[in-house]
Length: 72
Image 1: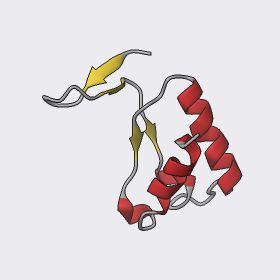
Image 2: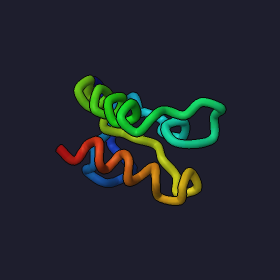
Image 3: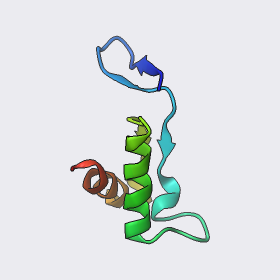
């Protein structure tokens, strides 16, 4: 997986990110918590390190879900 630097920092993330809006809100069909966690963990296994979330999706439930999925 290619990486990109964020701004002037040394922080690198994957060139391909995962938009997390549909994991727990907005669309007509949201995933169950276990499905969302499995999807996020699969993305990490494939090299994704950039997850796009926003507090408006909960608030904060999206970030908590991503945190729970990638904590291990």
